Image (tube, rainbow, N blue to C red; front, top):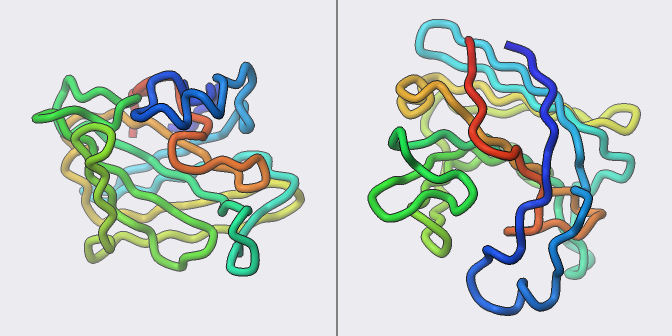
Amino acid sequence: MKKKLDLISAPTGLQPGNYVKEAYVDPREPSTPKADVEVTQNGKAWQLTLSWDCPDPVTDVSDDTHRFIDSVAFMAPGTPDAVWITMGEEGKPVEAILWRADREAPLRVVAEGWGTVERNEPPEGWTVTSAWDKGRWTVTFNIAEWPALEAHQQLAAAVWRGAARNRAGLKSVSPGWFPIEA
């Protein structure tokens, strides 16, 4: 399956706590308005690729604490009615695979709502490759097996552009779950 995704800004008004709501008014335009996604399945294995325009990549922030790293994630529902925008909710988890430009390995993420996000090392057989070329990132996840994706056949995507000061809930996201046809 190949698909062009229109992305939206994650709504800051839904963020927990008051700081983000007050400091960042919902931006009208996402920092990354479009992305290309490709999903293939081979048996129980998945290959997920996302590419997007990024004229100013940020791959290292070790020398400046006011900068943020480029990242991307794919998320799958853990239950048929899991909510994507709030990272799930109690009893309705989500699972994700996260790439950060400053890491060689992806991270596995699980959550049951805001404030419950757990990042872990990936299961065996979960890898990522990335390349930035001519103003565009391409990130490919190879996943040996992902039961939540297999069961529910839908994904959501998120893109953080460090140069746009994206981090945590400040990001561009798919406007909901999108079905996959492997």
